[in-house]
Length: 459
Image 1 (cartoon, one colour):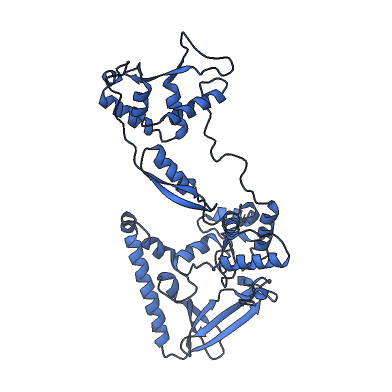
Image 2: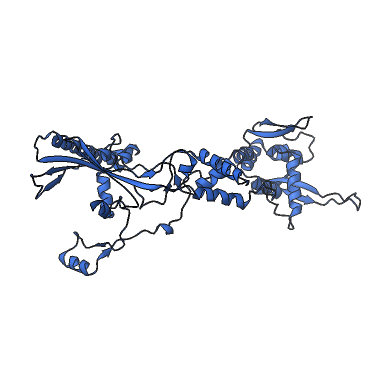
């Protein structure tokens, strides 16, 4: 809120205007005024000659004022004026605003990580009852640990070749991979196919070749039995059979096939027609023009009278009236949040950027900003004191006026669908209030009459 102290005579001739720069809303986050002239806004105006409240960006604007240049450079600027750089919003790709998926946080992927790193986890099993109904059951899996090796009857004497400390090192190395494909590659690299000298088999169902297992100890292959191999890695025979099966699926036989769980093509797919209907319904919601920062952002705003769940209910009811298939709330929310940059509430930039930056800063950043912040607060108090002094001044020739351009008022407003999904008319309100006389004047107009640029308001 900007206050002006105006000294006048009876005919209002030769008026002298002194701005007291009482920016109550911009200097403190607890203030209730709706616009500001703080140091942050002043810095924005230096980069934006039109200010942040202009509806029309004049493409013919030419900046001939160059205070940092010499006289000769000023003369050159007259002949070659610096044009205002315009931002084409169509070049900015519109991105979603929130709820980006993170596959690492999915419950099933977290369970995979726990299982592949030998930690305890809980899995979900589906049990089928006698009557045909299915129920979900939770099964707890304990943490894996190294198992006891083979006994003295082992022909290879594995427990003598490899010590317990070496077994523990192999066990930790295997589960530190943390990926099922890498662990299967590890098992495959420590297996060797052996063709026995005498083989008793028939031609219709020939026996598979035997496999020898080994570990690498000090760059040397040490052969062990199958029981010792499985006990050291805390695996069962099914894991080994899976590796052998995947080896056969590859022509070379050295590289095993990757895990294909969840990669089938039988997933339930949603038709593109339903997605198109959802996008058309979102596009049918009328957008509300922002009061602030509309020249620096691609975010769109809609009336906050309804939630996303309410909008989805309207979409469902509209689809039922047309006898069309409709998507569920999860699909509607995904498209709304990922493909559109829409907010329900108008942005709030009344608070000073320096105050917010100081409040959210770390301890080190606070120390750097402390001097600047204290000076900023002191200037705020002085501005308010100056405003109060002008307010208490009994001189009849001095008027203290406070003016502000209200946020955009969409018209009509209402909770009914006939109001919510209709094109809105932007209504503007410029208020001038005399603090001393406690008299206010409102100038109300709509966008069909005039816009809200500096030139528009000035006329």
